[in-house]
Each structure stands twice: as C-alpha cells, then as structure tokens.
Length: 409
Image 1: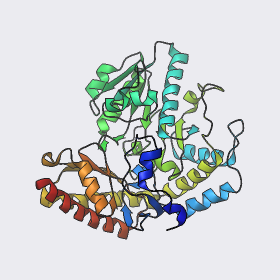
Image 2: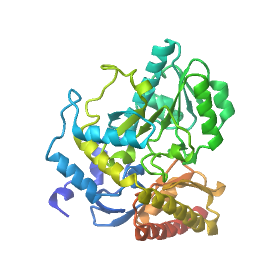
Image 3: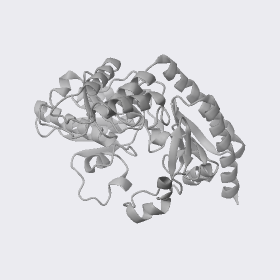
Image 4: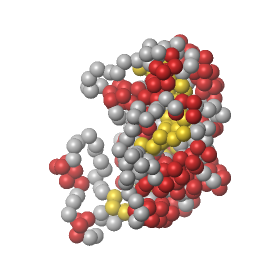
C-alpha cells in the first residue's frame, strides 16, 4: 500500500463528506475485470457493476486506451464548438437505433430532464401551453433533480424539497387500464422504464408497452423510454425495448454508456429534435471529448452479436444458478429480469432483509446490490469471465448459508 493510499480511510468520509451516502466500511482502490481490491489488499468479486455502470468491468484495456489517447489530444472546448469524438459517437448511436439526433449530457437524471423538457416544448409549440402533463409510474426512478425526482414514483426520494412541480401523475406499472384512465389530451409525455430497475428489476409486459404506445399515438403524447439502467447491452439487446418491438419517441441512456466515465444521452427523431432550437437547452460538460471517446469504444465493443448473445446466455445461467442456490432454503419467491440485469425476490419469511443478505455477501468477498428492501440485484460486467461468475456464485452460496442461519436464529 502506498503512503498516499494510507493517508485516508473510511473514517474520513464521516468527517468531510455530506452524509447523504452510507458507503461500505472499506475503500476499493483497484479494479480489473470483475475483481476489486480494497486498501488492505482484500479481493472481491464484483457482481454489482457499479450499479450497472461498469458494463465492461473495471479498467477494460480498450477503454483505458481510448481515454488516455484522447487525454493527450483534447479534454474540453465547450459547446461553443463541436468535437470529433461526440460526432463519431452520435453517428454510431443513431445508426444503431430508431433515432436521428442525440443530445449528450453527464448523468441519467440530466438525460431524463432533457427528455421531459423536450416533451413539454414539443407539446407547447404544437398544441399550446395547456398540454404539459406527464404520466409516470409508481415505484419508477428517473433521477435526483427536483424535476426528475418528482417524476419518479417513489415519494421517499421527493419529500422534503418543497412544492412538487405541477402536472405529474403516477399510475401502477404494468396496468394498462390505469394508464388509459389517466392519459388525456393534456398529456405531453408518458415516461417508462422497460424494466423497472431501482424498485425491483420488474420487466414490462408486452401487451402493456404495446398498449401504452397506442395510447400515446392517440393523444399526441411522446413516449419516453428511460433506459438509463437497462440500455447498452444490459439485457442482451442494445436497448431493452428491442425485446418488445415497441419503439419510443425519445430514449434516454447513461450508466454503461461510458463504462464508468460519466456520460448520458437523449435520443430522438428529427421531427421532435427540431423543437430544441439554439438556446433552448444546454449543458457545460455534456458531449465532452473524453467521455465521448470512451463511449464510442464502449458501443463498438458491446454492440456486437458475440457480446449480446453471451449476455443472454450468461443471464439465463445466472438466474438458473440463483434459483438453485435459494431452493434449499425456500429463499426466493422469484428470480426475474433480462440478460444480466437480474432481481432475486425474497420470499415472505425473508421480506425486508435484502440489505442483510447484501452485507453477508460482502463478508464473503462478493459485491451485489439491492433493489428495494425485498430484492437482491445483480448487474455484473457484460463480459464477465465464466470463472469469475462461478466464483461469485460460490461466494454467494456461502453468504446465503450465513444469512439464513442468522435469519432463523
């Protein structure tokens, strides 16, 4: 351990950082592939992927090369100019999707903010100021800005920050009748996650997405798919909505787009993009050369049949193994998801204890996630080696045994 690394510890967090996080008791200092090492040299298997961000694992050599090469050329010039990496990445994203145009920003919240502003601008320009209402779903998550946290359907994140923005309605997810009752000529947009992530890795039903698409067409409302977590190959398709054959008007993505480097994107068509004319929206750092150079490399690697097919196969393998691990204890009510976005739903007798199981996994030198109090979430590297996946599952098996013994004590 270097002197520099020894100068700070987890205790420093409690002294100098705003206490809005409760980080683990150790500090990771190095990562390679699907393994992490902390300050003491302990090695952990990472099946959390930085909350579905490290789509190519830690320190993927192609990403390191892309970043360092660009770092010797150009870091930032502002959006007074354009830059080559941004144009290359935008070309590739539009070629691979329904979209014609891209807006780059730095986080999923910013991409969703841009999408929601676009929807209101389109509606205002075309139909007048009264068409501004947004429909979202209960338990959705769309970011932490004042606007996006209120569009998200989890009051625990939005309470205490003053009056809510007007014109936001929440309905039950996967409930087409509720959506049909809520939507009207005043609706400018419906925003959905094709797979609800933070609330429990809950995939949409095909008939639901098809029905919502038809309702948006009927009422001239934009359909926004939030694929911040489910996009960039996470489900075995470049974007999760491709599994359903339902095309949105606007798509947002972030997380794995930069493989760990902050970048996000809002994608839309020429028809809608024209409403964000010069001066209507902007960002200081969005589309900077460093992020876009990395993002282009991520897209080149992920958007291949070999990688996407492997994600589907590994996801099925992971779900099967998790069911087998849980079966002797009647641990899981359901193991669901698509590709390598997997949620293991705890059975009734273990409800509310997902955090305890995550802590047991960490003691077994394994990183997993939770998605609410009842769901253990897995979002490993899309290119995780089979040996690392198997070792992670072996460690999870030990963690489950410890967790169950403590839960029954």
